[in-house]
Length: 116
Image (cartoon, rainbow, N blue to C red; front, side, top):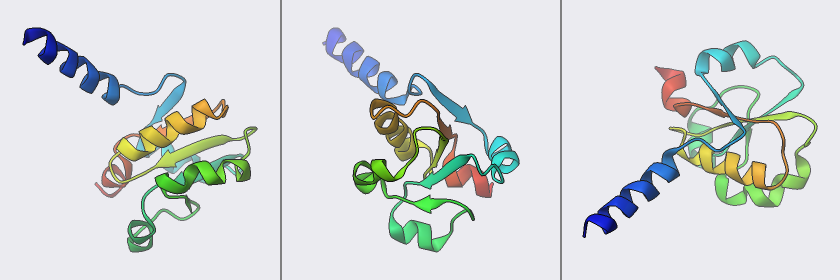
């Protein structure tokens, strides 16, 4: 029983750890970098969430649809990813890294931290 609990705890911890090679960006850093035309800003929330509120300059590519848009993103430019809390953008960062994007940044806390 202890082994099962330990394995479950390790699995949860593993899922919460940042993806290797992904820069964890604060909302303060994001505010400073929003005007950088060398970066690609992606919001992976649903279309409805994005329509409700979003940051100017971000493109809405819902997480479930992200793989079909990878060929529209440049691997030469950093991709900055945001969602509501940082969980979906973490998953999106994983997808981007596995697809060969060398520069990926995840906004810690997502839109929830942006509004705070």
